[in-house]
Image (cartoon, rainbow, N blue to C red):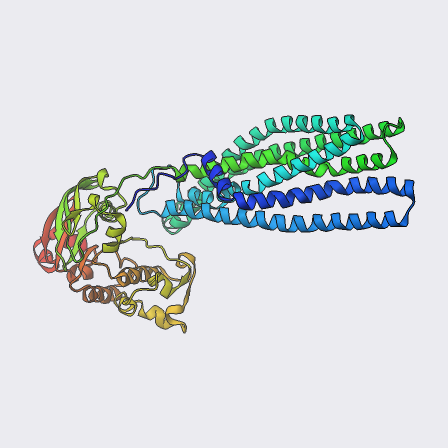
Length: 566
């Protein structure tokens, strides 16, 4: 596997610059069209003032007709420029958000974990809400520029009528932005804290959903729900804080804009009263004073959106810039090879040493569940090779020297709690649609009765997490998926704990038959699977203490007999 690319953004500012650079063309066209929209909006009160002036002076039907036509052109320009400008910007925004969602999701799904202190629920929040808010910068910048254009046009038009009106708009705009830029910093810091707390609440929900059934089993669900309520309450309080700060910001912006508009209107009235400006210029000034509130409002809100986008980009950088936990090799295992565990010490494992020869079916009877979990984690590469002592070899080559993709193609470790996805039975068994052994896998895993229950057969719909399946059906579906993958080396951990003894016996025979001449390791305490194996390794207190067939161990090892006999 190649290491993560060196061009991956390292900070929130880098992410924002990348987003802006990738959308320069769309932003240029969007800025042009939105600037044309704002210019048309600004031209409307100017045109009204000119119409009033010429109508009162010339009293000509021709001049009135030309004025009406000019207004029609302005209105058409405003309508079309807004429609197409926003279409371009929103398309670019949506596309950019999708790119960042894919990048964040890709980091979360990489075979090599990243050294980041975030749970899956937090990564999900970053890949959705933060990606969307970061991409908003694509719209923010053009709208900011177009609003500035509108304010400048208004200032120039008013300055032509009287320099004091133009200066009032310029000075007032600078003062408003100065006040609001200070307030936007508070919004940025509050938003970052809110995003972090919402993400923690999301992670808590994900953990609860995954562990809901066992929590009910030992009565821990109430304590878990109280824990979530505390985290959710913290997120709610912070959201209220952000809403309060945002409300103060919006209210202040509206009040300052209204004050500026009122100041322009009153100043224009005073100048008209003193005959410094004519009636047409007064109409223009009053119209611009009313119009300028919209671009000023938009212009004054932009710092807030910039700070929110920056806060979201910094959260995305936590994932995108996190280094991998380990740097894997580049080699690939030899097809049809064996599996060797050589002196592995990790967690509950103490110098575990065994070898599964190519084409052999071996079972491991682990007396301690923690040892079984640690062994499965090491073989699944959930534990980096440099995080444990000893070595694991596939086809005679150390895992540390092999690319993760190559190992995953050659060695499959089916998890104890395999995830079931929304879709169909077929899409869960063969997600890629390339397996040639789906019927055989269905039969070996004894999923045939589930298929037969439904008229759609393998196309029967499955809900998210297999909500419409029983525990045993979910387990058999996960086993069918592992068998359909048809990998050179297959490791199964407790694949039959949720099925009855008769079904378990049939599954053991089916797996042994289907995996004949393929390297298979089963970590289990099931007598049926242990009996189907070529030999059994006893894992006790972190080491292999015995090795023989299941029946010989039953006859000679009392501890083994007590551990596996049901």
